[in-house]
Length: 229
Ligand SMILES: *[C@@H]1O[C@H](CO)[C@@H](O)[C@H](O)[C@H]1NC(C)=O
Ligand SMILES: *[C@@H]1O[C@H](CO)[C@@H](O)[C@H](O)[C@H]1NC(C)=O
Image (tube, rainbow, N blue to C red; front, side):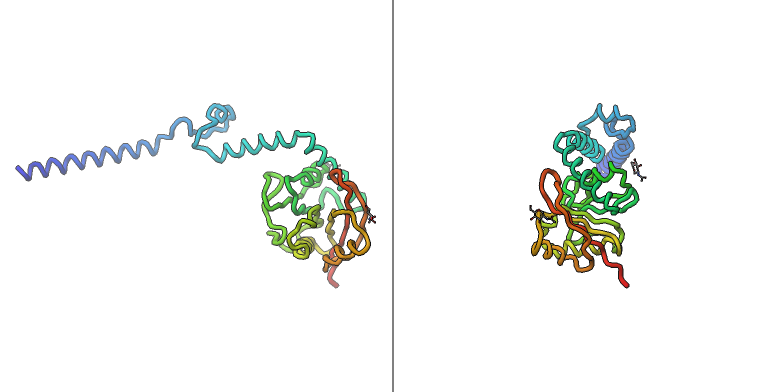
């Protein structure tokens, strides 16, 4: 009798293991309808709160956020101001559509957009906090680029740098010999200007002039990387 009960129990557990396994396999191969990835954008709209496809959802919301941000008057005004600034740099002969430009501490990316709109093909923007797709995350004191890969480095935020000399040496390192670093700083001349020029240990001074950038009076300083002899 005991043996019969044992045998019956064994059969029962075998059966339930089989059923459980089949159920698992069925669940595994049957993707719920709401998770079906579909290139049709209407599908995404129909299931906006689906928890299955978080990456897609994030992309959509970044695009939406950017569209909203980029259509504001303030954004346009700042981009136009950077455009004027870079037209000045172009008129000096330091910028063409083929120039590889690095914008350091680029914030939300106004300068990156200005350069791209001018037709500059290869523009890289970096900031401690990224703002895709215009600005990637990187520490200006430790740039993730090889030596000499840019023709021009630009920053309007040297003054806020924790270690200005390190900030400048990274600018000089990533710019090729003969390329230029362009900075915009609070209006300066004389001793102050000399101090800033002194941070650039591998460059020679090209020019300094007062400009207006995003409504502020600033001094634009251009330094050219020395070509090793
Ligand atoms: C640079 O690019 C802009 C925008 O694509 C274009 O209008 C302009 O003609 C280009 N300039 C040169 C010199 O190729
Ligand atoms: C820029 O303007 C300031 C006054 O705001 C002046 O002291 C300085 O000499 C000017 N710098 C240059 C390079 O013209």
